[in-house]
Each structure stands twice: as structure tokens, then as C-alpha cells.
Image 1 (cartoon, rainbow over the protein chains, first blue to last red):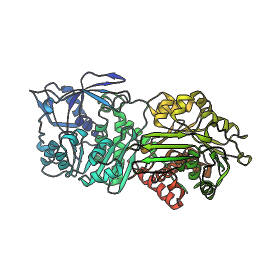
Image 2: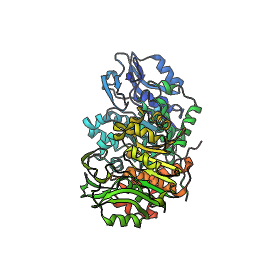
Image 3: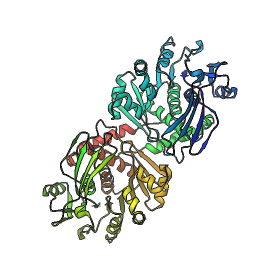
Image 4: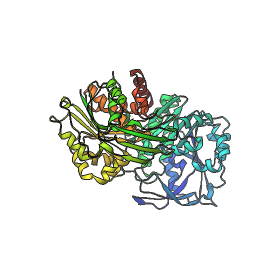
Length: 306
Length: 306
């Protein structure tokens, strides 16, 4: 099935306890689309960059089967830039600089050839723009997934509530789930959030795994304990890309398949953090992915007898 | 198989966002022995209390099949008392008062009838006393498990290192694993700690579950998302009691059975937090326990196809 990813394509400059980068390519849609490319062949991207964006990266997208017809290049502007520094524990980071560039005031345009989209991933950005993008698709996709963040809960809650009412699946982290619901218990928070619209909710807990909620069902997806987290940038987007890429590939929205999808998403995220930016997820083999998924099976399997 | 639990039997006075208690019975060995009683019939307790300790509680131990021949009553002293207050998030707490009473300078005595112990649980206390207790058993038990805390890493690291060299399984939380190993990565921390002695390590992560390590194997045991955590006091000890109680019952130290044991431990801990103190774990039916374990199976099960 066809997947459309809409979101930021950007430059990141990163500092972690393990090293620094110059400007490298990042952005939510970059991580999502590259990751989904390992699963689904019909992989469409909508985003915007400036004239400073490297052609080389567009080539890399295309080599991964990502259709970039919907990637606007604004010759007058600069690509969205984020400069961040991670603390020792990698769970916290400081933003040193943000330049929205062409991403500011951008309203996505959907190429005609993307109108048959079955699976839609709305990467983290202004909620009103996410909503407007969804409405530009003449036929509502079969499955609409959205990522957001605490910033929009602070400054655009009304718009966020509106788009939440129209989507199928929301992915946020545990602190954001607590903020959005006003409830500390993630179990109760999940119910409150699902009542806002999305029938499926994924709460990401970083090194503690992720929770998948739907109706009265809950699945706890573990995270693989890693020797080294080199750079967590993009891990959440890579997770989302693996999840929705697997769904688009299998076109099966049963809870059992959502569980498999979240395992694939977690496996992909565990690769992402091993190197800076997209470096690790650009060059993965199917065997590496399958072996990593088998590590999750080993990690989580048990059998109750009696 | 026979299980011996050695540790504190105490009074707790608790304040949580949900209410307060007067002095109620608590203590590591109390939670461990009561919980283990649901699994193993040969359940021996070594501890010390003062003349203020209620006979009613000794009756409750005995009704659960806990042998209290090793529970010393010091008519001259007072029972160990702890007064604590939990913060809103339940993950942090302040100690308002601690009175060690008869627990201070106590050296455990092992009744002759306990000498056949196969499974030994050393609850959290002074590491040198834990070590001395282990040495008082003429035949080394088949499986020795130890709980400890950050305080002993701060003030008695040498003694802790000595007892760690002689045990089979250590249970600590994630912050303590990081402190003990000096490593932020729990995967590397686990290797470092297992090199100190224990071949099996359990890292407790509270609402994020627990990790079981042995050689190169890792198992991620999820925690059940709960609507309400009423009082977390004793959850770690209840977890340990369920774990070692299940092992003593099944007498099977294979990794597959350790995984089952950790699921039972987690299930028991999920009951513990539903009420104050030992209230919930005093009155459990086998059906309740089995149903709760089945919730863990539902929560963690997935199947990879392809």
C-alpha cells in the first residue's frame, strides 16, 4: 500500500557526549521516509527545503525508493536548521539554535500522484498545518498517524484537539501523554486521549520501550538494552517510520499486526541511535533488520506453565 | 524446597497522595515472606522485633505458613520504625523519621531447624550482616539472592563487594545498578556487576518493569500499567518474594524458569501497590494470582510472522 509522509526535512547540528557533527541532514520526515523504505515500495514524501539542501540527499531518498516529487525546493530560502546538545544521560537536551527558514509558514502541497495514499504519516509540526494537509487528500486514507510534541500542547491546544479528532493513531512520549491528559497514570491517560479521537495510541518511553493502546487492549513493547546510545536524534521518527512502514507493507490493522509493527519500529529505532543522524538507517540489510527483530523476540518471550 | 528469608520486620507510617496510615506492619522480610507463602509451603523467617510488635501479625504469618521460630522478640527494645511521605508522582519519597530500635546491631541467629535451607533471600540490610548470616548456614543453599540499596554503596562498599562475591542473584533498581557499576548503560552495568559475583542480576525499573540478566541472556519483564498506584511501599520486596517463592516451589533454575519467576514476582508487586502496606498481599486467592499472570501474558505476547 502507498504511504505518504509529511513533515520536516532539515539540517541538524548535534553535540553528544560522544562527539559533534557539522550540519547533517535530519528532520522528522527524513527519518520516517528512509525507515519506511525498508518496508513499503510506494513511499511518498512531502516537505520543503531551501536552496542550501544537498542534491546528494535527494539522490539517497530516491535510491531508497522514496518519491520526492512532493519535496518542494524554495530557491529563495534556507532549510530548517536545529542545533542541539545532549546531556550526559542522553535523556535531556538543550536547543542551542533553531532557524525555521522555509519551514515557517509552509503549507504542504500534495502532488496529484499522491492522492491515492492509503497510509498517511503526519510528522511533528504545527497542528493546524497537519490538519490542513489531511483535508487536502480527496479520499481519506485508510490509516492516519500523527506525531506531536509538548510545545503544541502549550501554544496550540485547540488546533491539536481538532486534528486529534480526525486521526487513527497518535504517537507521543510519556511526559506528553501526561500533559495532554492531565493524568499521571498512563493507563488512565490513554483512555482520556483515545476519547479525543485516535482509536490507537502509542506512548513512547525511550529506553523503557513503548506502550500500545487500543480499546481495552494494551501491549508493552520492550526496548533493547544497548551498550551505547550514540545519538538519540530521530529515534522517535525512526520508530514511527518502521511502525507505519510495516503496516503499509502488510495492510493489516488487526491488534496482533499492530504489535508486530511496533516491534519493527522499535528494532529500527535501536539502529538509529547507534550512529549520528540518519547514518545507520541509510545502510541496513534485510538480514540485519530480521536479526534485530529476533533479538526482541528473545528479549520478551516467556512461557507460563502450570 | 525450603526458603529462608532474613531481613527487617518493622513498622511503617506512610503518607501518600491518597491518604495516611498510623503505624502499620512493614519491613522487607515481612513483604518477602508473606508473598513467598503463596508459592512455597516451607517458608522460614529470621528477623527481630520489639515488645511493641503485635501478636496478631505473628498469627497472620503463621496462618500463611510462615514459620516464625526465627523471629526474635526483644522484650527490652522497640521494633524498627520508618515514617515516609511519597511525592505526587510516587517515584520519590522523603524519610520523615527512622528509628532502628532492635534492628540496630542485630546479628541474626539461625534456628537449627532452618539449616536445611535450599533457597535463601537476604533482604536489604547492612551488607556485613547479610554476609555473616550466609556463613551461619552449614551447607550453602542452592540459590542465594540478595537485595541492597544505594546507602550501602555510599558507606559500606567494601562489605557489599565481599557479600556480592558469594551470592547467586542480586536485585537492585536502575539507579543503584548505575551507581554500583559506574556505568550509565544498563547492559554494560549488568556485565560489570555480574563480574562482581552474582551470575544472575535483576534490575528493577518500577513502572517500567524489570530486566533479568544471566551470561549473555537478557529478559525484559514488563510492568502492568495501573490505573492507580496507591502505595508503592514494599513493592520491590513483594517482587523478590514472588520471584524466589516461585523458584523455591519449582526448584528449577533454568533461564526459562527464571523468566517465569520474574513474571510471578511482577504480578505480586502489582497487587502490593493497590493498598497500603501488606493489606493487599495478605488476602490473595490463587485465581487472582493466575488471572494477574495472564494479564502479563496478554501484555507482552506477540508473534513475528514472515
